[in-house]
Each structure stands twice: as C-alpha cells, then as structure tokens.
Length: 178
Image (tube, rainbow, N blue to C red; front, side):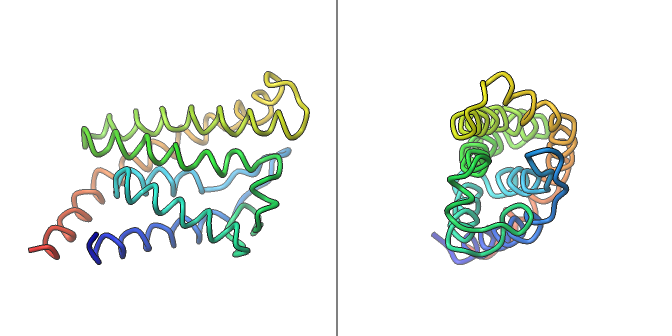
C-alpha cells in the first residue's frame, strides 16, 4: 500500500461524497450522480481502490455524514427501501474495476460498468421489493426502467473520462514509486 494510492482513493471518495447528495427525486428513487462517481472511481482506480473508495463513502454515510441522496445519512438509510442500491455500489465498483484492470480499454470500461450496473440493479431491486413488499416485476418497472437512459449516459461519460484519467493517475502513482 502506497501513500499515492491512499491519496487517490481519498480523492475519489471525496468525489463520490460531494456529488452524490445532489439529486432530483422522481417517484421513489432519486436521480443522482452517485453512479457516475462510482463508475469513474472504479474505471480510474481499478477494482481494489475503486471499491475501497465506495466502501469508505458507505461507511461515512452510515456513520451519519449526509452524503447519500438528498443529503441523507445513517444506517437507517442503508436499511431502508433504497439501501440495496447503496450496497449495490460495492459489487458495481468491483466488477467495473476488474474489467478496467484486465483490459484497460474504452470498451472494457463500458462493459464493466454495464455488468456492474446489472448486479447493482438486481441487488437494489430485490432489496426494495423485500422491504417494500412490492412484487419484483413492479419494483423493476419503478426502480430500474426510468433510470436506464440516464445510467447509460453516465456510463458513456465515465468511460470517456476514464480513458484520459486512468493513464494519468497511473503515471502519477508510478512516478511516486520511482
């Protein structure tokens, strides 16, 4: 573990914390830039540090810092109807980061984000369905379908940004190690 890796992780944790609370609530699920920040963290930092950044974000929110959507915080938010989506950020970052680490290409960033988002949606929707006593199909219609276009745009933008930022971040880390 190098100081530069910790600093990069802290910077991306801060990015997630800063942009995630702002959102637009449409129905029951808010539209935020949290997924964009998760995607970007995973694609730039890779599976280990990208997932660590998300884990620290979740820990800060669970501890009471108002970093969740609409400046929510606390364990109750994680245990609530939309908490499965928060927890789903972890496998999303892990999967997206694995693709980024293994292939390091634009297509891999998008493919990893897409695969990670599928797991995120599955976990979040299953949790929402369970907590809210809503059939899974209806939960999909409410919690996933309206967000597909926006998440597709976020994946595309995060992938394009990662093409430039990942090599830069790697270069800075490698220079610090030399």
